[in-house]
Image (cartoon, rainbow, N blue to C red):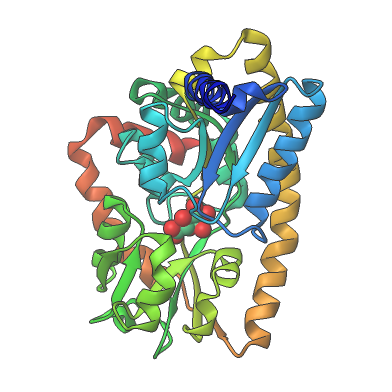
Length: 327
Ligand code: GCU
């Protein structure tokens, strides 16, 4: 009797490992991992997408979300997608440049004139080329999410001009473009993953970092950094991706459901963003953060050397010119 029970259990474990447990549930379940907090408006956009997908597909296709870096850093999640161990992720376009090099154009400082210009690019031909172009690297971009603009926050002194960055260790994302930008502005760039940043700020490994207001707030970095200088040096979007091995396993119908749900979630996410951005600023001010609005001209003047350096890189340089020519 006991022997029979053990044989059955063993068989079940074997079937589970072959099929993967998610396929034993009703409907197909895609696993999506990302690094943001559940209160973040980009997480809210993905929750909306998951609900929309379940409705659209009549429960045949679902998404299970693993937030807050539970399954690893953005770089690790992208690698898991490439080898087919994770279905979907949401990352900043900044670390994506290590996998799909043309996306680095999205992290260039002051490349966009304003928010409308940025969304013309994300929603237009260039945006589509960059999303689908990642397929060459086993990653397929589905949509861009609004991640506002990035600005510096520091522990001990406010940043009023690039001169104030001199000698400061500033955390950057895992991105050559971000490193180049902080160096051009006079700071010392230090790449650290988002999940390790709170402790690094607290322990003085770095003197500051840079991000949008909802991330500054939901990560609680404002508890350590009391100066937020809105220089808006980069408008780096977030990107929702699926591994090509998962994408190619979906039927055409399932691909359509997923793309439609992702598209619908962008409209919702952008609404959530507007509210969360203002709320984040109000909350950090309430917590004693000083907000500085520096003159942006000295910052944008100082990064012009980066654009010069791309004259030797025709692929990126032509993208820069195309972006600039969009009205
Ligand atoms: C933003 C972005 C995240 C990214 C983070 C960072 O918050 O939405 O995807 O991880 O910046 O600076 O690492």
